[in-house]
Length: 112
Image (tube, rainbow, N blue to C red):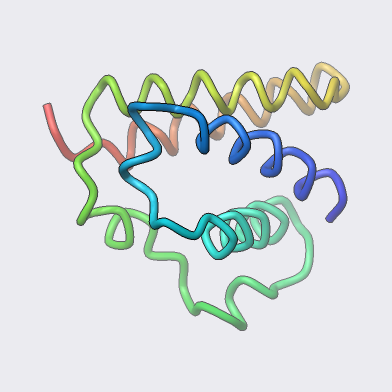
């Protein structure tokens, strides 16, 4: 959990200062920060706290109310890649995270 808490902490610190992404998030960033941390920990083999608290992820459905086009997708990836770099994980871990986030970010895109 500490790895994902730090990774997502770095990411959300950047989101807080970002003019493009910040409007897509609720005023209070604590809940989305927690949700993403729990989701990623579970996805990568950690405890099933996310499912127990929120049920099935249904990621595309949960993100459908937000206008996510190429610019938002690209900025999200930029901030997440910066967060990965800040953690300095071993190369195979960094590569696996980037590959997953590339796929997930494109899957959340719902605007041209």
